[in-house]
Image 1 (tube, rainbow, N blue to C red):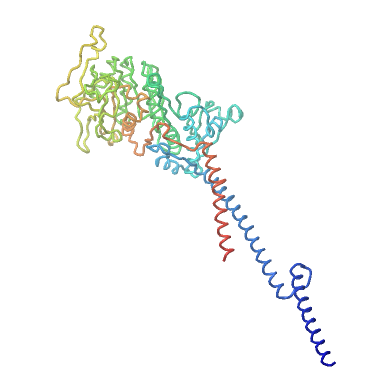
Image 2: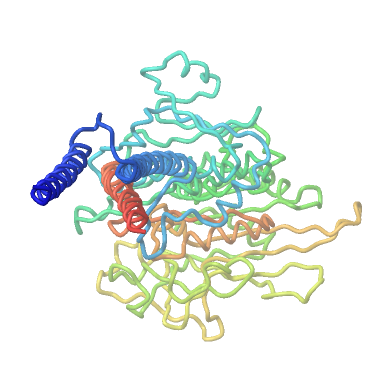
Amino acid sequence: MNKENNEINEILDEIETIETDTADEIDVAASLDEPSGKKPKKEKKHRTAGAKRRLQYRAGFTATIVIAVALVILLNVIVGVVADRFPITLDISKDKAYTLSEQSVEIAKQVDNKIELIIFADKATFENPSTGVDELDTTLREFNNALKQYNSYSGEKVTYTFINPSQEPQKFAAYSEYEVESGDMLFLAGERYKTATVYDGSYSNDLYTIDTSSYNTTGTYTFESNVEKLLASNIYTLSGGEEHIVQVLVGHEEDAYVIDGLKGLYELNGYTFEELTITGSKEFNKDASIMLIPAPEKDYSADEIKRVQEWVYNNGNYGRQLMVFVSPTADCPNLYEFLEVEYKITITDELISETDYNRIQNYNSLYTMTDIPTTDYTISAVGTANVFTPFTRRLTTTLPAALESNTIGTYAVPLTEYPESAKLTKLESLQSPDTAADTDTTYAAPEGDYPLTGMLVCAIDSYNNDTQTAVDGRVLVSGCSAVAYSNYLQNSNLKNEELLLGALNQMTGIENAITISSKTISNETVTFSNATALIVGLGIFTIGLPLAVLIICLVVFVRRKNL
């Protein structure tokens, strides 16, 4: 009996042990499914550590997104500010036509007074041009971009404002004293000012020039941008640069193309043009440093010649320069005698022609190309057959070619030279109706006369005994008037511009002269248009950059997660 009781007790103990183990397993399972239940200490610690890790992952991911968004916003703000202060221009032209020159940058940096630029036109005309002419649109954008650069490089001393006359008539009226019109630009520095026309819809103004003279025959035209020249010259003058006045004498049927060409060249390089009718009684400007006689067709009177002579002589002080361009057909004996007697320059009745077809244009022997020798007046134009001089009258002189250093006297400096392939023809033979068209009227000059010249300078180095100072004067005579025509000055394949600008700068003694040339606009030059800027902005800064930042942040996040 006792044995049976013992066996029953052992069986009950085993059952109780099984029930206890089962209950423990149920409790463990419940602890996993029932968050409110009491969990074993070990399992609670395990669950808490996992939750913390998941929270850390979520917080890290959120922080990554926030940082990425903040970086993108900050980067876009920085890029916007920098782009506004330093405009982006992509220039792929072979001559870097739209890269602001070092001289322009230096001019902007040296501005020490406030200069206001007021453009009387709609701002959108320059920011979003849509004229239908690609070259014009490019130039208008370049002008807007250049304004920003001058503002930046000058430390914001050069400021600019757009005023639309039709939409802001009261603001426009405030500048009526300057006699500006819609499309004009005003450079204002205190009481000093300059004006220019930047966009009036015409083929030619101060901002650009369009030459369509060959369009009917070749189907092409030339578009020249004067953006950099216009801004640099006017800002330079108003910021304290020395101003040189060119006194232009008119009233004797002068060649208007010579006046327009030289005015466009010289005014955009720091000079100021003033026309004066010499037939009147008005006195010459005593502050002018250059007098220009632009190819008159009618002769000067003896009294007018005397006035010119006295102005150049300046009571023995000289310091004034004279430039005379000669008409190919005019007969002005008084003027020519004055130049021969006073300055030993003879204007002959011979025209220079060429027999070398590599030195002519349009298969016309009188459309000659000339060589430019190395002189102080021609440094930037030196070369062979690189200046176009059609219908050039030959000049001769009895002056010596040069003087020894520190010598007082008068000497000649030839600026153009024609080799022995050049011939001469009498002017009267071309004008005579009896001359047969197929008759060769050309002849060679004496062998000792070569090289021939069509432009030279009479240099006067003298001494004023009254003031006991050294003085000097310069007289330039050109036997070719067409050398100064705008279409030749603006032709980048020719050196007409370099010759005439360099010669005048040397005559006036300008050491830091502005020598910025016009630039030809073509399809080779590309700037960021608004459409291109939008594409670049969306592609790089709105999509590309944020995506790159997000990828970088995610890579960093994943790498940290796996650590």
